[in-house]
Amino acid sequence: MTPSIDIHEDGHVHTRLCNHAVGEMEDYVEQAVQRGLTTLIFLEHLETDIRYPLPSWLEDEDFAVYFREGERLKQQYRGVIDIRLGAETGFNPAAIPGIRRRLADYPFERVGMSCHFYRHGDVHLNLLSNRRQSLDQFATIGADTVITAYFNALTEAVAALDCDVLCHLDAVLRHLPGIRFNDGHRRQIEQLLDNMQAKNVALEINTSGFDYRGIPFPADWIVAEALRRGIPLRAGSDAHQPSEVGRHFDRLPAYLAAIPE
Image (cartoon, rainbow, N blue to C red; front, side, top):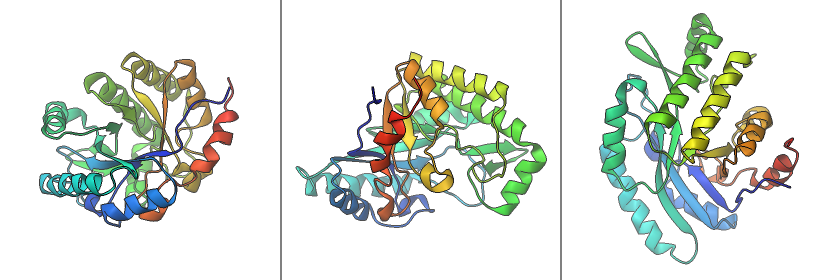
C-alpha cells in the first residue's frame, strides 16, 4: 500500500524575511493557489544564540511583520486556501531554555525542528552552506565527526522540545562531496526515529532534495524505517522563492510507492 501523504499541502516555505530567500508572503500564497494547493504553511527560520556572520533567520521585529502580514493573508484568502504560520526551529544544544521561551512567545501553528549550525570554538558553522570556506572547514574537522554531532543534536532536540515535524533529516553537509553515513550514523538515525515515534513527531519529505540529489530528503531507507514505526509523513518544498512552492509534489506518489516495506 502506498504510504499516505497530502500532496495538496506544502508544509515548509520561506520568504524574504529570513534573509536568504526572495519574495513577499503573498507571492508564495498566489503560487500555491495556482498550483491547486489547499494548505500553505509558512515555516520561517527561528535560531537562538547562534554566532554566525550571515544571519539566515528572523529577529523579533521580523516575526512581528510575519504575523501581521500572515493574519492579513489569512483573511484575504479565506475560503480559497488555508494559510498557517509556523517556525522552522534551529536546534542549539546550548540554548534550550531560550528556544523554549521564544517558541512560547508566538502562536505558531506548526513547529518544525532542524539543526543548521555546528559549534566550532566560539562560532558556528552552517551545516547546509555551499560556501567553499565552510566546506573546507568541515572537511578539516572530519565529516564523520560533524555528522555524529548533527544526529546527536536532532535526537536531543526531539527529546527536549515539543515539535510537530522533523525537517530534511539527512540534509547534513549536503554540499560536501562523497558524504556517506556509517553504521554508527545509521544507529543514531534509528534512535532518532524511535524518539519521534514516542513523541508523535512527523517526518518531512522535503522535495528540495530532488533538485540537490535526485531524491527527496530523507533517503528511502529512512522513510521505510519511519513507516515501520507508524510515523506520519508531511510534504514540504522548502521553497525559498515563490516558483518553488509545491515543487516536485507530483513525483511523491510514485516515489513513496517504491519504498520497500
